[in-house]
Length: 172
Ligand code: SF4
Image (cartoon, rainbow, N blue to C red; front, top):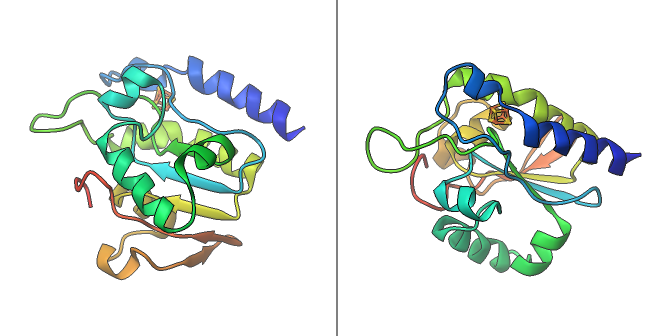
């Protein structure tokens, strides 16, 4: 049941072009990984250019740093990727920003993509959610001083939330 719902959702996510149709310069093709048995869900901001090329979330230098933190917490990368779930607030590559780095998805794009995250959470019901970086942390915990939030565990809607800084150092 879970598996069928998740497969259907993934098909919809991969086909989705809502942001492109709304005029945003994204590269369509949702990037995420993981299956129905996941108990931990990592939620980033949006895929980067490296992820666009590999189709694998957190596969660039920021991912290396993230997985070094997760390894310290007892999650080895290969096993984590095989078992757990990785997604993002907006699931398509947003394109380059005006200055260095990738564009931060707008509030409208986040709104357009939000129903997918709601469905991912409904289907998987992860025991632990790890929002990574300001945009994802704000989504789960509201606005607050990141220094007061990062590294602490919170309970929201019956699930545990452990916010982490963005491993790229951007949008900390
Ligand atoms: S970011 Fe989300 S809402 Fe926007 S096109 Fe991609 S999957 Fe669709």
